[in-house]
Image 1 (cartoon, rainbow, N blue to C red):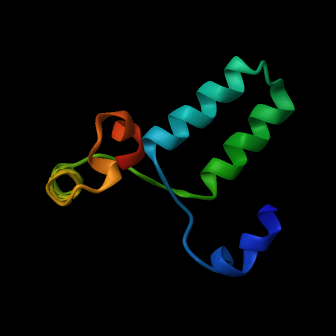
Image 2 (cartoon, rainbow, N blue to C red):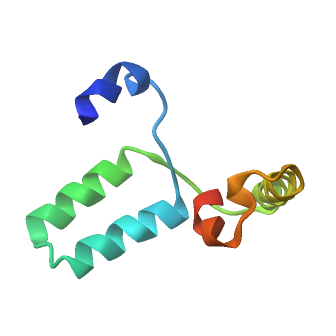
Length: 85
């Protein structure tokens, strides 16, 4: 249950990647969400800091992917491409 995670996340920064925001909005539109549901989603998104791409993030991603592949970590596999973002 989601409420079990509350002690772990309460009082911490809320950070979303731009890919996660895009996936949330895509899913809502595919599901045919109406105005109130979309407004609530947008409200919740605005409560978060969105991580936008830039040179530093690109380097972090490249380092992570290299480590995953070199160490045999599951996130290095092609099918987990989106999970590294």
